[in-house]
Image (tube, rainbow, N blue to C red; front, side, top):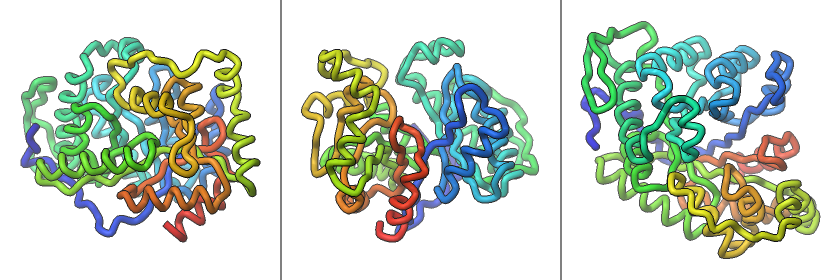
Length: 352
């Protein structure tokens, strides 16, 4: 994988300030404008909110654009799947969002661990091919954003001719990504501004950050920022926090079935397999990391959790920070943002 001479990589800051993200999730039966406004109000104070991507969900570009009009502070992270639209088209859409919002847009490039959702949109590329395509795709995004002269490109997946510079070039949109496979590591180390990880025990997270840093160095880059996704169950006592966490409906259903952690291998989702391997080794790790909902959801999504008093949770967050985590994507009960987490987020800002 080669970095194009035309590919402007935004510089990484050092020391790296903490950022705290969560999710923007209006009600599933809308989202009406009222739903969007309510969700925007609830996430006020976060650095950025992720708007996810599914073939059957609201369009992130439309939803994100709507949300941005309801706040002059909100920053969005738009999940975006290569292969659905041409990269020069996507670049123009994202740059327009950035232009009209005053630079409040980043993009999360997802390559898919669920083949069925890829097939729904007519994408039948294999796992490693999707990451090679993403590499070319991100190169073309950045060239569209930064070029000052007309340019053409003919590569493995895309061909474009006489692409003209436009008023919206160079919007400084950061590229986020995630993935645990070798192909993901190569892509993320070469292209990403932010590399997103699922929650794992401290030792495993440290090993992954080291691998990302070493791979980035092989491309002559500093490592990307590191984001870690976690659910937080915080209460006045450890017992109260554990009671809330274990009352999760998905976990209760999992216990009722009594089937244990699935041994199914998800061939196209290395991150999911890693989550399940940790869950099979035990539900509790380190001081307060809990993999119970990971087991219940079969490794799907942001399910690793920190459970305990605020002091206990903060101690573990600080340990992740010392390993090199720059950003935390946090959720509460049900995997969504919960306003009651706001005091913990404020403490994170002060102390981490």
